[in-house]
Image (cartoon, rainbow, N blue to C red):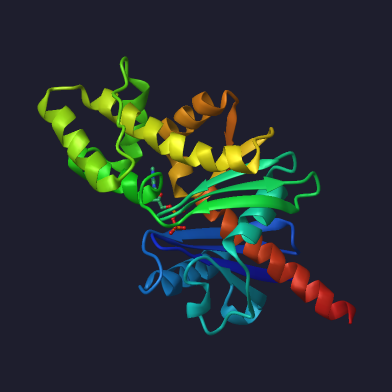
Length: 262
Ligand code: ADP
C-alpha cells in the first residue's frame, strides 16, 4: 500500500511516498512554496520517481502553511504533528526537535513514544528563520549552500546583535564596509540565528537526542552554532527538508489502517 505526504511551506514544497508505512519509496523537493506551482511540481516528481500514478496512492495527507490549498488531499495535519511523526520514525531516540523553515522556527519536545509534550514557535518575526539567512546570503553574496563552508573558516566570529532582520542587515553591511572577513560575519549571523532557535528550545526543555530538521538544517554553520549554544551534539535528520512530508505520509498510512479496521 502506498501513501503520500505533501508539506507545502512558505519557501518550498516537499513530497514523500511511503510503502506499507515503513519504506520511503521516493522524495521530492521544489524550492517554491504555497501559492505557486511548487505543490503540483513535487507531486508529479515524487510519483514519477516512484514509477506510480495518483491512482496507486491509497491516501494523501498534507501539512505545512499551505496544507489547505490542495483539493485532492484526504486529510490535513499540523507541521508540529508531522515533523514529530517523521523524526520519531527516523530517529526514535529523538526528544527535542529544532525545525527552522522559511518563515518560522519551532522547538518540539517529545516523550519516549514520540508524542508531542510541548512546543514553541516563532512565526511573528523573520529573525532566526530561513528568511533571515536568505537576506544575509544575498547581501554577503554567498550562496546558501556555501554558508556552512564559510562558517567553518571563521576565526573570530562577529557579533550580530540586532534582533530585527532589517537592523541586522544594516549591521552586517556596516561590518562588511569595515572590512571584517566574510567567514566571521557569516559565523556571527549563524550564532544569532542559533540564539533565537535555542531560546525556543530552552522554553520547551532540552533533552538528548536533539535533532534538527527543516531547510536550514542543511546549513552546517547553523547546526554548529546550535550545538555550541546547547552544549550538545545536534543530529541532522536524514533529508531534513522532507521530515514533515514523511510524517504526513505516515499519518496517511495510519488513517488507512484505522478505516480498514472499522
Ligand atoms: P518551509 O517549510 O517554511 O517552506 P523549509 O523547511 O523548506 O521552509 O526551509 C527553507 C529555508 O531553508 C530557506 O529559507 C533557506 O534559508 C534554507 N535552505 C534551503 N536550501 C538550503 C541549502 N541547500 N543550504 C542551506 N540552507 C538552505
